[in-house]
Image 1 (spheres, rainbow, N blue to C red):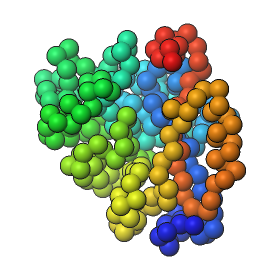
Image 2: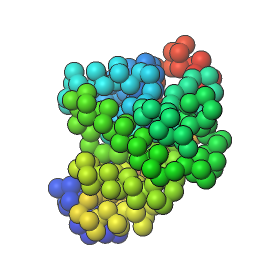
Image 3: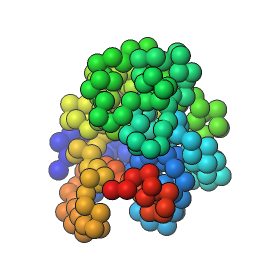
Length: 243
């Protein structure tokens, strides 16, 4: 049962509701993800998606969102570039955010996350987060929420606080994981999931369907969020991420 009375009510549901948001992460990363995400939202059980505004295929993703305003989405705030053969970097000019890029001007790799959070200047992070959000708004789109790519809850307390401030400024919700952050959002009148986010990225591919089905059957009353990573599995997707 939900631990904080009134959380589901904030969303207009009775307290015994089983409410599940399935968010397709990484929209805009590549064409195959874009195609699968839209198909999953229109014909499957994907509820919403998170757009990586810094990626080369973000332009196609934003066009798809503009063409179909019924597709809800958030901004997947990104400081990490985890694909070795496929590079992306900041929306802001790289010379204005030197502490969050490598010598080639791209974001740091997944293995360099500790290095990123040791050296990232909060001013650089804010400039880049704002640039990503503003790119989306300039495309005449209205996101519903903010979340983060490759890290949970911002990865650093001051980055979390910054994101909360941006949510307030832009009138957006935020996807959080830690229970203490959930309580902070609820206390400010914003709904938040009752359970930690479940991310299916690391599930064995051949077992994913069975795992999701089992968890769906075991879902308890409350507000839950799952993160899915979808693609068509085509040649492009296999080349980008062979595993």
